[in-house]
Image (cartoon, rainbow, N blue to C red; front, side, top):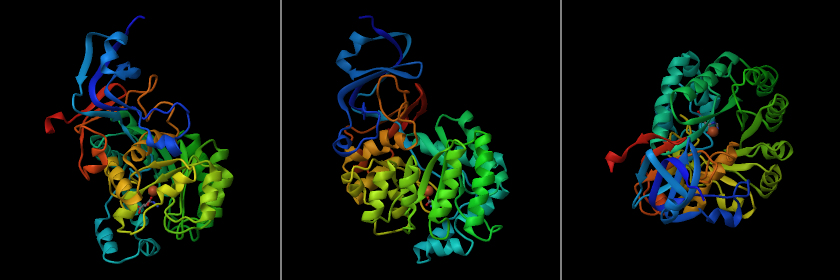
Length: 426
Ligand code: NIG
Ligand code: FE
């Protein structure tokens, strides 16, 4: 057999976590316990694509190194796919640490929103910001995420709430895609809050459905359309109006649902089958059956419960035992989770939601890629997939959840190229 020529080889990995699947579907049940671990693993890349995966001892028989091949020795370290963060609110101006501290001292989140604070205060800042300012702020945040091992991020608009300002936000994402390595999957969240110019949620939901969605779709600015189905934001029937328009206009769908209250939004999901249902903190037997029928990935966001100081976390194991595919995300945003790190979310999911290390790793990589429709190309280390890896300065994957709030990432490879090198720190 003729050896393949690689332009990048990572070899001698103490543990190579491939998280391979092979079914083409998100992992559920027992498969979630399998991270496709190869001891003393190696991976070879050509032109950004993975061309070989196996044990380092077999590498020489299958892969050839040329004069220009970059060879990285990962002796004593682990190598795994870059994290996929399937739920963030990346682009906004201003900051809300004061309000957050007040809430920790006892103010209620939804009451803050009703009195014009919360999301709407970020909307005020964001409307005043220029596209360039938003790009600058977004770039800083993406750099922090990359540093923490995130190579792909879903990013929602939703702090503009006018056609002009939502387009400005989505445009800033498009600009960011061109100037930094983290891949961005853009989501239009025009139905994030009811802006003060509209008296009620229904009339704004209609405006989003009739005017904003077609314009965003026409400009090709978003892959997904999301809606915040919640008390003080949008009812289940408002959500249906927005999502039906999205589907008609060729956008895929997602829902923020049951974060604080159960408004029956999951019933809409069971009928419309969004790609993902996000949050799902508040669930009953009926909502669980809706979620199952939706066929959606449940994107659980334990950073929110942590950030808001809540006792109750999303019930990950209930979803898993009901056969629902689960993914993990940060929900990075200024109000309910200012956290860049998927490593920390993995720790939280083990400590507070009872996931095993293996389950958490699958949920933060391959299942997260499914939640944003990128699993054909991203989220695992398999031949034919894009070469997005991280090297971590730990000797076993069990130390990912164990080293709480640490950043173990020393090298990030995105699309076959070194995107970030932190090795001098270790
Ligand atoms: O996912 N739920 C709505 N949106 C965000 C919060 C946004 C904000 O407070 O600015 C969330 O929790
Ligand atoms: Fe969110």
